[in-house]
Image 1 (spheres, rainbow, N blue to C red):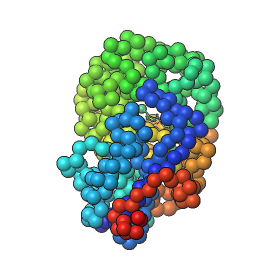
Image 2 (cartoon, rainbow, N blue to C red):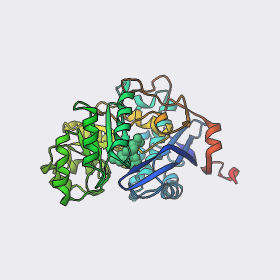
Image 3 (spheres, rainbow, N blue to C red):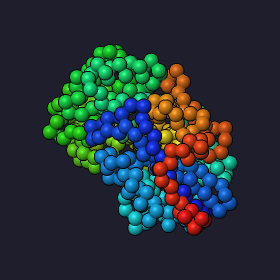
Image 4 (cartoon, rainbow, N blue to C red):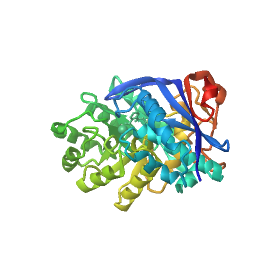
Amino acid sequence: MLVIDRIVMREVRLPLKEPFRISSGMVSERRIFLLEISDANGASTWAECVAGEHPNYSPETIDTAWYAIEQWVAPRVLGARFDGPESVHSALERDFRGHQMAKAAVEMGCWALAATTEGVPLAQRLGGTRASVATGISLGIQKTPEALVERAKAALAQGYRKIKLKIAPGMDIAFVRAVRQALGPEVHLMADANSAYRLEDADHLSKLDEFRLIMVEQPLGNDDLVRHAQLQKRLKTPICLDESITSIDRAEDMIALGSGRIVNIKPGRVGGYAVSRGIHNVCQQHGLPVWCGGMLESGIGRAYNVALASLPNFSLPGDLSPSARYWERDLVTPEWTMDADGMVIVPRSRPGIGITVDLDRVDALTVRKQLIGSQAGAMA
Ligand code: OSB
Ligand code: MG
């Protein structure tokens, strides 16, 4: 039995070591949305909502997610009696459209809280089977191909198993060519366009085929499937969908239409773990690999992604870079690290998310805080 008694929401500001640019926007400081979710017995867990500052990746933002959790998500779960975290998703979907990242933060927190109270690691509670997960890096758009080559070489030297290059019109073919030439034919390279192209660009995008990328991620519209299917017919390079896959149904539609051959699963984008596992299973049944994407999470969100990536069909390296790739100092101890073979260890030694939150640091960085649920009166 799972009964949530209290949710504390916080916003923490964390500057990135260097600005991260994608085709649809740039971020230099992350507004990190953290939650502490507690049950009536005082057990609690930390969770993270991955929504960004601007609605340039998905329609949600940290501010809409804050409002959605306060107004609709928290009231649905507080005091409700769930037989387990498996039931939280359907309770949040009933007559409640959208707001996947807001829902996911609380739903995933419920899985972690269940793992904590049951005394098992989160990865095990989800059905994860891997002891460690392979990691790739997502490199933001750089000013010149040379600058991108420098970063890609450094990433390769660090052991990353996959190198993803952000592309946009005018910053694509020459950039990918330069990196392929510098790193050689064997390195697992891919490109992510974040919806920057149109189907009319199919001939242009087919120029990427000569670089033998392992995939091209989300070239067309953020909610498109039909045009991606047409594009896939004209590309040798497999299409991977990110933005377009927001539910199990959309993953099934992608497979039925042939809109892509790989899915980037971000649990925040799809509403949490129940749907992530569902998409994982559907893809597995159809022989399609999946991998775990990232949203520039703090070490708290990273714990949730690493646990998910330990499921068997996460067979391609995820965007699961270690703490030092993003931050001078993370919010957790120990910080997330990667070994020289690009592997991140899945925490298995203690119940729940498996890392400790540095509360002094979180307190020092908190710019807003709101308590919902029991003892709400004590906050004022
Ligand atoms: O498209 O995968 C994406 C970051 C923000 C928004 C969208 C994307 C990304 C990344 C970052 O690629 C991956 C990471 O967290 O390292
Ligand atoms: Mg992407």
